[in-house]
Structures are given as C-alpha cells and as structure tokens.
Image (tube, rainbow, N blue to C red; front, side, top):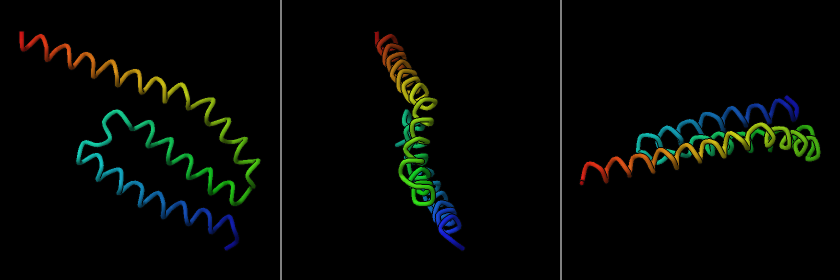
Length: 97
C-alpha cells in the first residue's frame, strides 16, 4: 500500500468523520458564520497527510499557495457574516420601535 496509499486511506476516514461532525454541528446551528473556517480546517488536515508523504517543506509550500488563495475568502466570509449579523440586529431594533 505504501505511505501514499496509507495517507489517502486515512484522509478518506477523516473526511467521512469530519463530514459527520460538521453535519451534527450544522443541525445544532453551531456552524453559522464559520463554514469557511471549517473548510480551512479540513485543508490543514489534508496538508498534514501530504506532509507525511512529500515532506514538511513541500507541504509548507503548498500551505503558502492555499493561504494566498484562501485568506481573502476567510476574511470575506467573516466580514459578510458580521455585516449580516449587524443588518439582522438593525432590523430587530426597527421592529421593536
């Protein structure tokens, strides 16, 4: 099977478990505003598997690529969520008055 096969199999198991965990959190309403962070967490685990196969330096380089494309999305997601919460709070204040 080799290290690559082992890492891929471990990542499949992780993916199934992580999906179940996120699904449970979604049903409880715990993920609102945090989906981008949950995706980033999954990417970090994938990079750990990649590091086990290709080495830490290769994974660090890949992390830099993911950070370059993912950081704007993480920031944008947080800003959109904050604005949505602010708009919801303003709408609630207006209904009260």
